[in-house]
Length: 320
Image 1: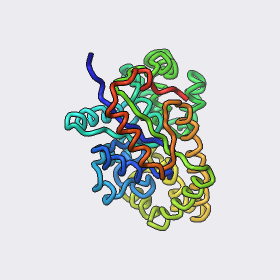
Image 2: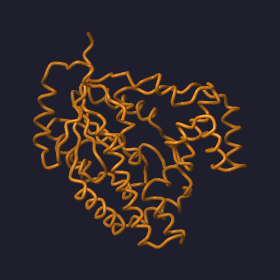
Image 3: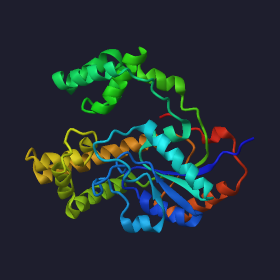
Image 4: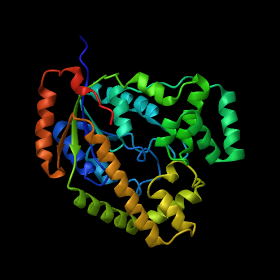
């Protein structure tokens, strides 16, 4: 029987303290950190993504940060491909892979696999591109609602990349992307996994979020966004439509005030944190603790790493 590699997951909502805890875990376990954050993959987007600083990255090896430009598409399938290569690299060197982040879909796909979309005829892709240019994203979203209402319900109309991907899947196969995902079931399970979830009381988390946003703005977040615009990155890009970046673009373009943009960024970040907790709490395999309990996390992780391989069912990721 082939022994599956063991890895540690450290997840939780934004601003809970994952970076500091991950570094402590990595030091204690001879581990290397793999980011599981859909925004920290982008170069030049540092302040608004709360990316680990160069000083923090010097304390433990970090992977899957700064691997794409802001205008390059990236999704869960690509993440799995990249992350599994890094895990193999880490394991071959007898280090411990420590997957850290708040993008639940990336973690779920990594642990359970993700279906590979059927090849799309270039004619279909070009037809949808022309439709986007001539009729706009609203028409594209309306088309998705008609053929795949379940997927449309969980996507924002301006999430052009995912809307296009869902439409391409339907046009190529005649089956909604949700049905492909359901049939796949995320049952790959190539690893033995120990999952640690970080959580603090809600009011304390929201206070952290508010203070972090204020610190980002004070550290030059508007200037970071202005630099991206000056580099030619469109405000319509998926990366530039993310929390924080779209708010700062509105301020820079004069569509709102600095104070209003900051207040909306705080509100939307709090809402995002709530969605993250809903996702992760649906997985009963997480061991939940506060960041201050890091030594307990180290002890539990060491026990897992030195134990005999667990039943594979313990490594499954339950859909929320």
